[in-house]
Image (cartoon, rainbow, N blue to C red; front, top):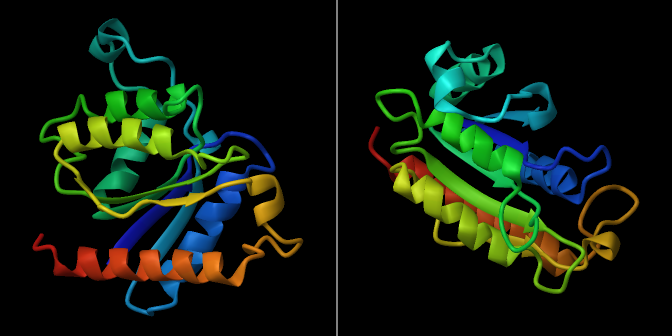
Length: 184
């Protein structure tokens, strides 16, 4: 099973990038998964417009589409911007949705968020579910959130609270089992 993992944050020292790395590590622990961890910074795309699309897909969009085709499952750690998803992530969803057949269809997706707020980014994750489900993806029912992220990570990059670290491992393990049960 191939799993694509990425953070939807573009910030260099992002809490969501740390969370994505921990999720990738947890997904590898079962031994049955090939996990690819990427940074969205490597896929810089112009804002979607039908005019730009008519002129041809940008190179970064084509590269991401090929990557997506090779992975039936995704784990995304996304920050919350103004109670919603980051604009560049919505832009990515929109660009990829222009292909036929729909590339997001039947992809299994686990959503996560690390936030400095007490709400832990959950509002943004609920907003993020909508376009993915609308495009036919199987969004895993359980979402993982990390509140007060500025103090949640230890100096080693791991979650400082052992219970929280165990929850991350359990959620990822459940997601991997979920993906294994899907018929592709």
